[in-house]
Length: 214
Image 1 (tube, rainbow, N blue to C red):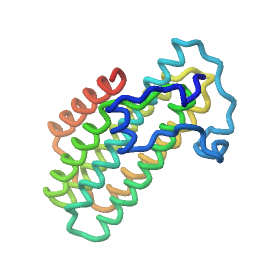
Image 2: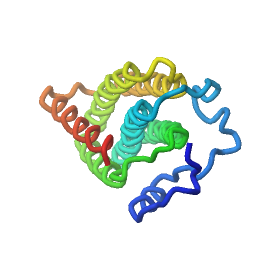
Image 3: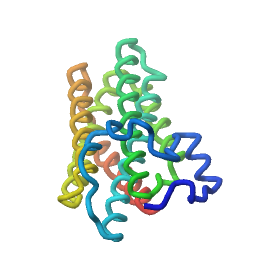
Image 4: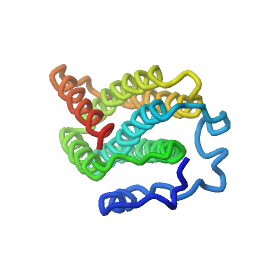
């Protein structure tokens, strides 16, 4: 793996780092910094390693969008308990972001350079969902997490069987996202119209396509 100090950061890279710091070197507690960190590193050829990095980069972008979405919803939430719930979920998504960031470092890869756009777009969408009302906002959380769960399961299935470090991260994220969706449902989230669900899926597809490549 190329040492981090050899990387040359562009202006966009530096902007991304200000949005979410990317580790320049492994932290002192790297052995316990994310699920699966105790698993041995998988032996992968260059092509397979790049394919795994592309998956993790998409997941990293998704976590940037998720925390922005929840912060946007929290900004306009009317009920204080719901606002607290959304901010707690956003903090947990930030932890997921750190896990993906660390795994990208290990794979000698980088986050998507479009991260500032993912954050800004998701924050705006979250704010609009929140303005529509708290119960609709919670329904938006529930549907978002349902779709994220499908996406994560697809990525888990596409990982090499021996890449347990990446697998444990995504499995832990999958469990947390399912819990977020269930909590939103139990808090009174309203089901969204089918057309809005399809639109959400289409938008996430665009993000996944772009994040894997840029």
